[in-house]
Length: 569
Image 1 (cartoon, one colour):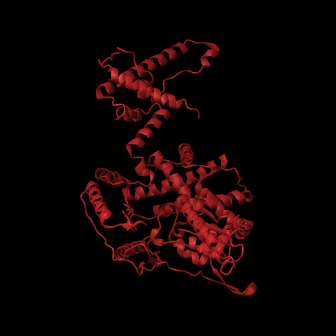
Image 2 (spheres, rainbow, N blue to C red; image 1 turned 90 degrees about the horizontal axis):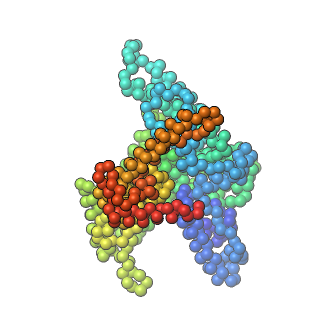
Image 3 (tube, one colour; image 1 turned 180 degrees about the horizontal axis):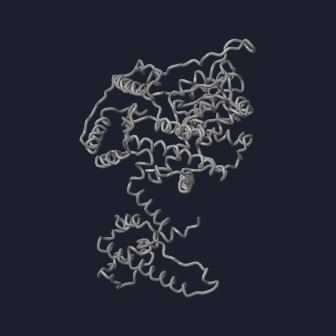
């Protein structure tokens, strides 16, 4: 994609600011923008040496030239809603809900639900998750929750009208009752999604799914949007198109369809966002949604499916690796062909197998079977040590440079055994992603400290700190601190009871005064015990007392969070 941008600019077809590149993640967008920027700088230096303008036109890249627009799909949709949403009644200052805010609002909707609930068998958290998930799927597929609910109720009516056996009456078995309850639950969830959407409108808020759906609606109902975006961007490059949803396909086809210069890149075997409405089939719909103009102008204009090019040469892999990859991708294609309701399965589009480059080496594929994650991690560490001394590149000065090797884990739980084996063998490593970072002891202690500061009821987080390597509070002192925490809780409870007894004797206007009550979530809190350490010589009812060393270290720990909590916010 970066080379295509440079070619278009070098040949004078477009200026850099007339190019739009869209990809999925912010990281990918940043990498694409960086590559384009680097290649354009190289082009600018080469063009500057062409003083006679024999290769490049004059003024190809001026010093004040703007950069191409590179964004994510959701960021572009947000810009469309911000620029043209007012024509559909959407204010520019609309609030965008984050994940936690969306969960809170959906939780309120579930708690306030007053419809039928006898068929519910799931926990509240499961229902909240289902509401958020179905709301996102409705937005990605441009479907109204009411239509989904009506469809589910129609299927339920058809199912319940069927006899258990032909021409015979018999009570429905448990499996049939469970299926009926599941359909009713899904219909109720669709009803909650409608109420969730109403709650968002009442608060003037949107979530990420709403952004894409509203942007698609703008593209369909506001002709000015397509006119202005076509003038702004002469060339559009869409990356990872196999992971786009139906709403994103509608958005870009309505804005840039009908002969505009659009290129989409994707691999159906790498579609990973099916859980949120994406479909690899979008890649094969591209040729029809973005047709190519043929013939002349006016009445003689014609349309043909967009041409397709297959980038099947893999320049970074050996022959054996590609052969194994082709075998596995074929099995995935056969499995995908059997998905879908019976009688409606369609053949999937075939993608040519990957081909090695002319200079590819044979390579080696090794299959290992291990009894545990620890054995597998040990074997990986041994292989890394072996490849680091047998496979290397040369630096410009001729010195050997050990290669950078990657270990891909299917589950985050596998990262920790691999990390331990690397530590034991002295192999330098970097864990990519927050999953591994959150498992390191230093970060665990930091998170525990933040939890203690934010919630005085998190005795579990405080236990992590005081029993850790820094403060080293032993079991005997921990039991004494627990006794002191229980004593504080009992004292607070007696005080609340005494206040309640006094209030009962008050007459007149003072009877409506607020009553102090003990908070059950604060009962027997170690955090409170740390803030109010017992006096020296204190002994619990169980005969336990704090040692001098433990008292000193606990006092130091108590002063640290207090100083942090007093920092200005």
